[in-house]
Image 1: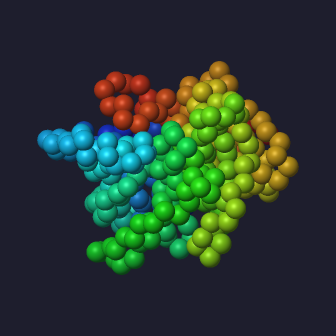
Image 2: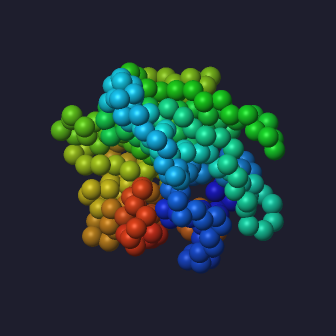
Image 3: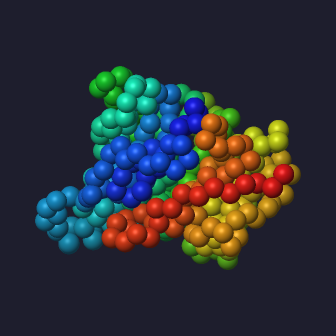
Length: 297
């Protein structure tokens, strides 16, 4: 968070990491799968997908009449699971209490999430097919919030299968995936202009798969840190001149998220990384590793 608190999801739990290693489990749901986390003021938001129990009856004929493959996937996932937005007030003393405030519809896989300066949330709908997009959630009200959902950026505007999202200085950066390209992994950016998206620009592409990313000022210059899941490393990109440095090769395994360090637990030249993260994998000890690497001065 902006005050240096560190929250992570470990698949079926929401945790706070204190004193650089102590784990405080705040919320656990053995049927839920937790995804993106975003802070807006005193609120911490978390995405949760939960398989319905018992599973509802399925009309296969109607399902396959939904239209395109993506529409079929959307209908199937909406039928089988609840995709929810949870939030907790992290300004109060004691452990934050998470409650569900909204069910997200018409998305395949809600993954990365970020908040803008006005408190609106942006959620990546990852499809692994070139038909994804970014959903905007406008939240108003206090104890009884009202959430308005809309498609903010679609595949028609250059957003194919987004994964990680971060917002800095009215610019939204996201990782994307183009299945038909020889360099399918993409880092893209789009300006937020009076709440609407500007043109989408590709910052970097590679023959790999990118997961989450972060953007921060480092040594008085803007840098983008990208988790390169397949190449077992972090790519550090100078946003001004485009120069790239690869970090962590041989020391990190399948990094799924990366964040620039925030005091007091971490220094500005440290990167906090989750390793081996896989959504919807709840049955083994694979993943659940948090590590830190130092950017060489």
